[in-house]
Length: 292
Image (cartoon, rainbow, N blue to C red; front, top):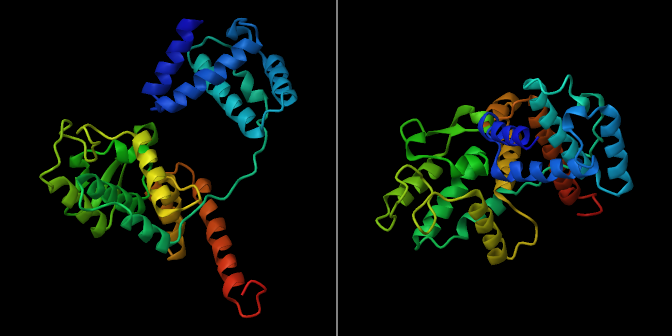
């Protein structure tokens, strides 16, 4: 069984391009299920055992989000087992995942984005790097993993575009603003920039490719510096540009392609965010509003 599990994790990393964080979470969730089955053979798992596990998690008081995540990990595992002909069917196909309430993503106003851009100390090399990253995040709406993996030859300075490798190693070419391009150019040409990794655009203080975790920590640092209480991550900028483009009239399909969403339904949530912001603005500024 250990061999089959390792094969699954290798498959997730290679064929599915899953992050180390995702694989680590899958290992924990799958091990919890194995513990529940008292290490019985996974090949013999049927829908009855899965439903017993579902009932067990509910009795333990686990949240719907946690239950859904664990079932998702198991669904992927047995999908792989089915592919390898280790099981006759995927028992998770016969089990319904708990419905989760969809929370609207948090977005920033354009003024807040400007505040973020002014936070880095541009007299330092790392400050120039951070401005370039923030400009690129807001310009393109790329994921933090996509930004971390960018190489210099992915940037086309003539056409103002960047080639991105997204989920499942799918490539897409997306436009960027002249401000993002100029910020990247200034950072790359700074004589203080010493690269041990000659391909990467964004480097850490040691000259190697910056990691997604380091980028997250940078955002946390700027939050404290600016005294912002709300939780803002690189992904918040992705949500923000999508919402701002929608409010400016960009077609939903074009936004889907920009963000690299597989399904248009994933992108439509920004129509709800836009409507919510407009309603809040109306309530705040209308002369007859109680909040005005």
